[in-house]
Length: 226
Image 1 (spheres, one colour):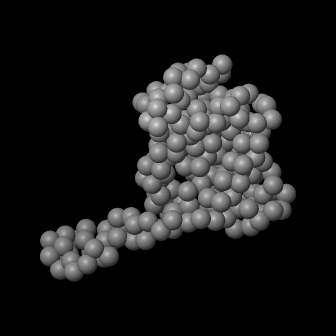
Image 2 (tube, one colour; image 1 turned 90 degrees about the vertical axis):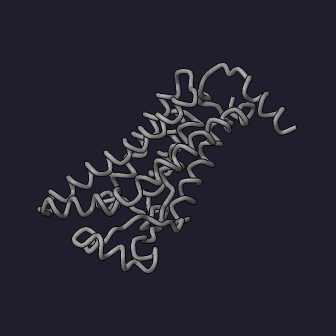
Image 3 (tube, helix red, strand yellow; image 1 turned 45 degrees about the vertical axis):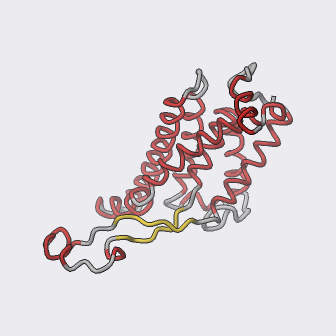
């Protein structure tokens, strides 16, 4: 029965690629705003490859004496906000997707403690706020790519470019803030590695999965949203 339902969803023809600003779509957008909040406070513990300096200076001896995989694996508390943003954009499109993200950002800047470190307008001075602004760029780019006959390759492309857009905006904003504080170039690279370098690979992986899930739910929820 499940296979038959999936086949039916596959052949449903929508009037529009993405829903328009109707009541059903607005309710889904509001729910998606809550999904970003949930993702913010639901870290996932994952491992990343972290090769120490000793392995680079004396590779043979280091790996000969390697007693545990824990010596080259570092735990990362991964925050799945970016995949959720890609999911929203792939399901709702660039218009309503941006509206959903706007609700999240507006309530956060208004003082509701829904950002990772609280809320309030002063949050704009935090180094990581650029990534939140990048949500808009990622949603628009992902939605635009999927607006014209989405297929498997387009879904993957939209997810990857959406992630790249978010990180580029985040890095640019962070670099400007650090330069205004007269920090060194090395400090900027350090922050880039801390906020982007250690998690962008997982962003790509989970964003691709989220994009496919978003397209499936677009079909599954078409009666509500259209």
